[in-house]
Image (cartoon, rainbow, N blue to C red; front, side, top):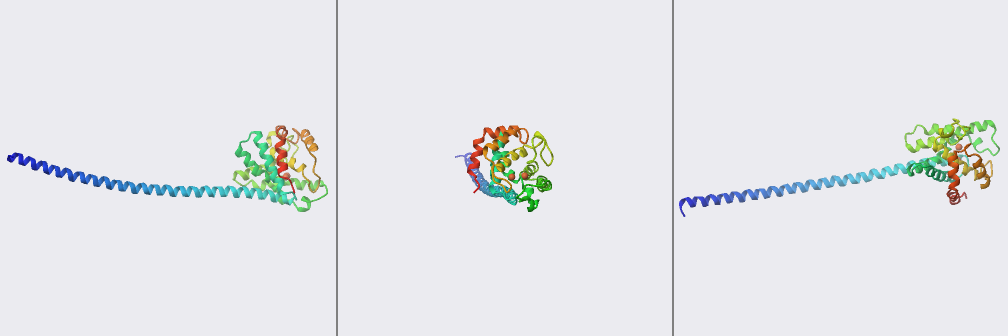
Length: 263
Ligand SMILES: [Fe+2]
Ligand SMILES: [Fe+2]
């Protein structure tokens, strides 16, 4: 080899060594990068997992709140009814009837279910009516009647401050369940569709159940008498559309009444 060739070879050798060194360094860098990536992936996964756990906790709490709200609303309704010596099953049946009416009227499942939960509160205002009037076995005199009738307004006043949708709905139900379609009801004398559909529905559900049950002041009516009265009160006491729905779905109402009989 000439001197020139020798020089070339050694230059190539040193270039090769340089290349190997650079490649090794590159490989090391890539490996380090991978490690960093893996660590950050792991951290991200951990953060994601922690978030999922928190979401699940929030969801459980949310459900808990909803369930508590339902129970409070139902218990308050039962308190209202028990003061007037009615059974807890009365409010349960009213709840079921209200949902059937709501669904057939065209309310969606969520709203109908909410009405089922709110309707037991219709008589909550009775907690403020004296026992001497509530449980009077004789017929009411005009003064008793006047005091008794304040329970609709009283119930509304108790619930109206709430911002919770369910309690807001219950406030409407308490306020308007004694309004009559022809405008002769109380406390506001609202007429037709001025009465909220929640009030119109609960009115029918409540009366249907009350007529069919023994109360301190009266014996239960038989079905024939109830149906005759409902037909007469179509468009008078009750929304005509709801009376039609009632008769079209009579089997469903009777099934609920059968299933939730007073003992
Ligand atoms: Fe009432
Ligand atoms: Fe009632």
